[in-house]
Length: 123
Image (cartoon, rainbow, N blue to C red):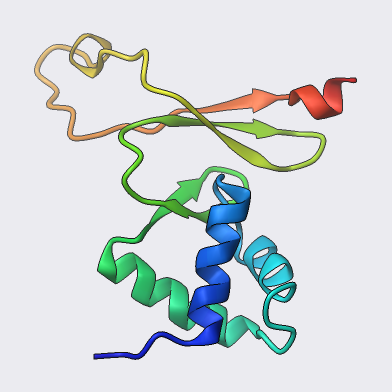
């Protein structure tokens, strides 16, 4: 069993503070506010463990690549602001995948990304 380290605690604090999907670069930058010596290899190693334990989820964004977010929030989608490049969670799901898929197709899951400008950047 792995022990809980200050680096792991820092990453947990990052996800609690930001509460949105984050790239490794964003996690590293914010994580260094908690542990100044945090490095990229440590972030990747801890993210892998956190994904394996089910604490966070890995998201594959069509433009930004791999992002990570806290698990346990239920099914939802995402909004990507093209100005600040941040990704935000959208509550719930308005898609009935049984009706969206052509006849004969069996849907096993889906992900929707909306793109545009967030309220902070629209001002």
